[in-house]
Length: 191
Image: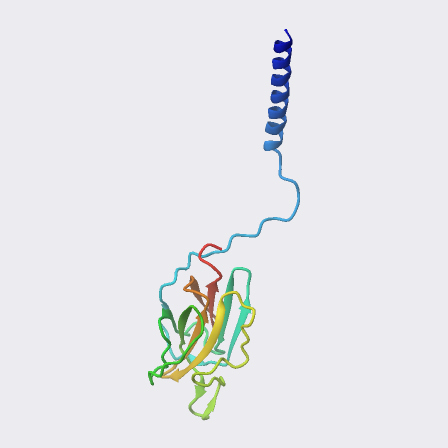
């Protein structure tokens, strides 16, 4: 008889525990900090390009840190939506048209070509003060998750070339907006 009572007590205890667990399983989660939004990474790492070239003059290059990616922006006032671009990963960065090798630090290198002059041919002055082989003036990428180095390649036949050293070959996207080209490089493949 004692065994039966013990068995009934155990079954009652297990049943009560399971019932309580089932009751809380469907309950709404407690309020608290929400999980971070998933970062988009379906951009791929293949070459990307836009058709128009030589729209106007490059005036500035700037960068920004975001939760999911690092960003570099090429400002071309007056370029509207006619600013061409070609962005691709390369094994080594060479200035166009000289073919001069320019070392770029990082695990991978993006060769970025923007359809805008960095030199005003009529006035004979630079519109963007980049020097071939040097870091981009005014751009400080210390503390960025993905960016490792920037190098100015030069300007030739209506295009300006920049080498961007990144941590690894990661997904990137290029967005053409009025008067600027934006390149975002993800922090990882699975952010």
